[in-house]
Amino acid sequence: MTRPRTSLTGRAAILVLVVAALAVTLAIPVRSWLSQRAEIAALESDVAAAQERVTALQGELEDWSDPAYVIAQARSRLHFVFPGEIGYVVLGHDDRPIETEATTAAEEIPWYERLWESTRQADLSVTP
Image: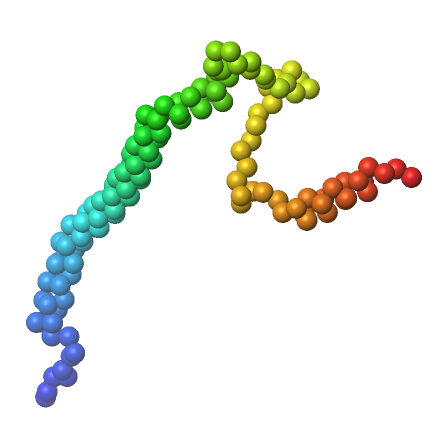
């Protein structure tokens, strides 16, 4: 009588056990390696951000080493004037200085939109 042949032999079972043992043995170091790679990537991005900040601060330092920039900042921030000049501060309705806002070309509204808005405002203020 012949014995039926099974698909799983003793050698195959041992091979499966060895592969499983290797997988378990390598799982922890691979996980540690992956977490270290993620930490390195995060630290590299922090270094890049710090480098950008240093570059910006160096530019600001160059600005402050220019005497004309220092004079302009003293005039605008501290309301300094040269001897013989008269300084004026415009106060708002709450007796506080009015802050001037610098406008850029991107923030500037085109003339036709300003015209349309002024006519719209005029229509709203008319009471019948």
